[in-house]
Each structure stands twice: as structure tokens, then as C-alpha cells.
Image (cartoon, rainbow, N blue to C red; front, side):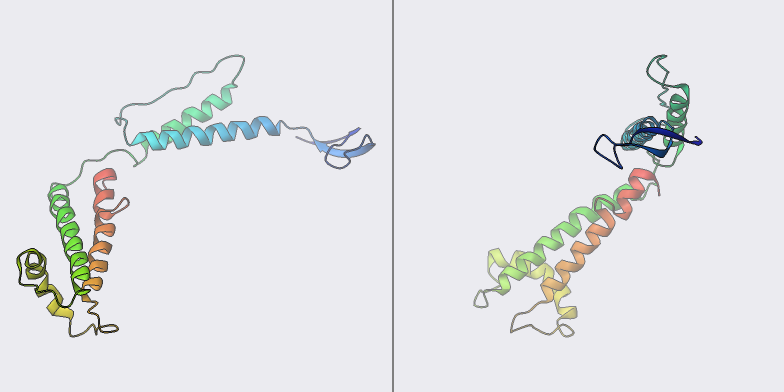
Length: 191
């Protein structure tokens, strides 16, 4: 990889047919770049698939004599070893995680839906909330709303306490059970 002077047409410096002396390094940069891209692609695919593969499964790459150098194959095998031995594999979770998830998920969704219904009911102040379709939502949520109704003032004459609770329940659901929630990560990766 030592720089050598060579008189040739340099496409980057002069697009015309001008001959000049330019210092070029003679390294197979495209080959190295392709090897790194292939390695990155294999690591990405292996990481994505590692959650679905059993921990004992390991893919080994063999070199084709004419197409791949042995160093590239060694690099790929080492990368696969790192990917399959890391903590991204399915892990055994504690016994309390699944029951807690199974209780919290429908509860938080139901409470969020009930608060959303309370928001819609608050738009119609003449509705009798003690009648049958409305009392199904009003009676369970009223104790929660009464707790903070004194601290959260109405905005423009509208009670916004259901919106506060809707935000709290949605936030808790996302933090605990969302795609990257704490319980979801605990179930997937044993964190």
C-alpha cells in the first residue's frame, strides 16, 4: 500500500485526455469496500434473524475458491460467531413477566378507551350520564377523575381531566408494553 507515482490519465483530476503525474495508492479499495458491505449485510441479517433462531444454531461459511478470499470467509465466520453468541438471543424470562403483561395490556387499553369515551361524552353536557349506555363508562372512571379534578382546571369551560388520564395510560402502555417497552424487552431479550 505504498504510494507510487505513475503517469496515467486521472479521471478524477482531469476528465479530458490529459496525461499527468499523479500519486495513486494501489490498493484494492473496491474489493475491501465490497467485503465490508457484505460483512455489514450479513451481520444485519443475522442480528435480525437471531431472535428466531435457536441458540445452538450457527451458520458456517465456506470459501468458494474462485470468488471469495479466505480472509473474507474468516471475517464472516467471526462476525457470525459474535452475532450468535451475544445477548440478542431469546432468553428465559421470570415467571412474573407474562402474567403482568397479560393483566396490564387489556387493563391499560380498556382504561384508555374509557377515558377517550369520557372525552367524547364531555362534549355533550346535556347528556344524562346515569342512563344505560353512558353509565357503563362514567361509573368506573369517575373515581379516577374526581382525584385530580380539583388540581387540573377546566380549559375553556371543558373538563380536561380525561385527556390527562388518557395521556398517562397511553404513556404507561407504551413504556411498559410498546414495541420497545420494558416488559416487551424483558420477554424478548431477558433484559
